[in-house]
Amino acid sequence: MTELLLKASDISYSSNTGNILESVSFELHRGQITTIIGPNGAGKSTLTNIVNGLIQPQSGTIERVDNLRIGYLPQKVYVNTLMPLSVERLLQLTRKVSETEVDQALAQTEVTYLKHRQVQSLSEGELKRVLLARTTLGNPDLIVLDEPTAGVDVTGEVKMYELIGEFRNRLDCAVLMVSHDLHLVMSKTDQVLCLNRHLCCSGLPESVSQHPEYLALFGNQAAESLAIYTHHHDHVHDVAGHHHD
View 1 (tube, rainbow, N blue to C red):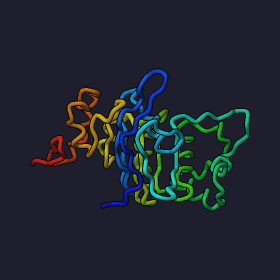
View 2: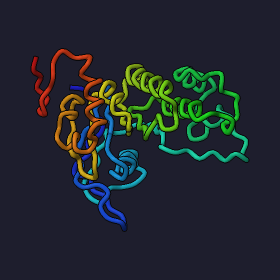
View 3: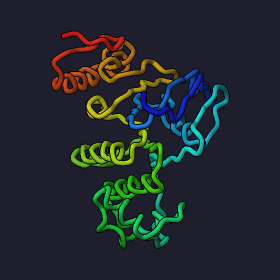
View 4: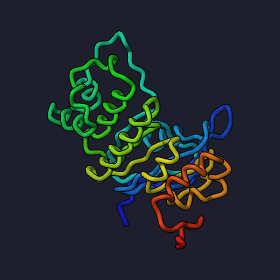
């Protein structure tokens, strides 16, 4: 069994508009990629903020291993176009890192050539790669990514998921990400959390993709993602995760 880094038990959170999360429980293990999927308004970003410690659950508990190091890529990053800020300086803002560490981080996402560029001059895809590089500084135990491919073209999406998989292997960390790319999720993820305020279903991608609540939420898109995913397999899994030839 891989090392347990974080355990969420019966997490609930609400706002003035109503319940956002209801009794959500899951575990994150080192070396495992976990993806949260769900419709808009399902509570996905709120859940990542609770994992990060940016907000506290109103009930339930989050247990983290001691000194858990977390790298975080938020869904939206607002860049002040009037403020001069180089890529190198951006990576040094919240953590004291050497120039060598900056170079190594940018090399991991293949954007070393952007080191001296102004952040406001970057394309959406370039900025996402720079911010992804930033999450690897300090050798994190857990990388949290909220819609890491938002605003990136299809080719860029595939490359981003490849890089995320490489980080998991190279850093031996856990990855928790929010994504809408169902077909990529099903092929690149170890654990899926299907969220719609409550946890509809969770587990192996192939078992989640056959769960009635998953199919009810995503319909035709779910069928397409399942077809693409199972194309690479010579067996199928039932809802419990058992496989059949």
